Every structure is written in structure tokens, then in C-alpha cells.
Length: 96
Image 1 (cartoon, rainbow, N blue to C red):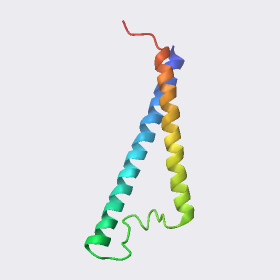
Image 2 (cartoon, rainbow, N blue to C red):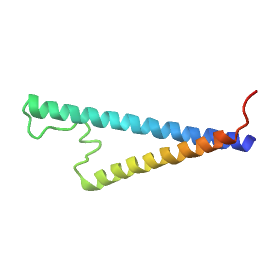
Image 3 (cartoon, rainbow, N blue to C red):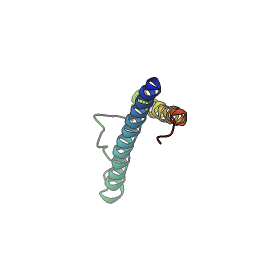
Image 4 (cartoon, rainbow, N blue to C red):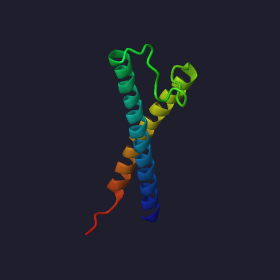
């Protein structure tokens, strides 16, 4: 029983941190695109600079490949961990 609880807590921690990473990264990515469109279409700056251009220069294909790889792997980690935590929770006896 204790082994199941330890695996449950590890699986849930991995799930929580993976989801948190995806939410934060995608939120910053969407914010960056919104500001780029604003700079391009409202302010007329062509090409619009990205907020994170120096930090995450996704115009470089190697960095773009790494970022996409991280996002894909994180998505699979979320899926696998969710399935594992669901299976582990089904083995736990009900609290009566």
C-alpha cells in the first residue's frame, strides 16, 4: 500500500509540474505572438521584434526544434502520467 502511495505522489508531481511548464510556456508564447501582431499591424513595425528574441530565438531552426521537442515530450509525459495516476488511483481501496 505504501509503495502505491509513493508512486501516486511521484506521478502526480510529474503531472503537475509538466502541466505548469506547458501553461507558463504557452502563455508567454501566445503573449509574444499577440504583441508581434500588434507591432506589425497597428504600429507598422516590420519585421516586429519578439519579446523573447534574445532568450528563445525560435527563428534559429535548432532552437525551434529543441523547443518543439520539449513541448512534444512534455505533452507525452502529461498523457502517460495521467494514465498512470488514474490506474494507481483505481487500485486504492475506498476510504470508509
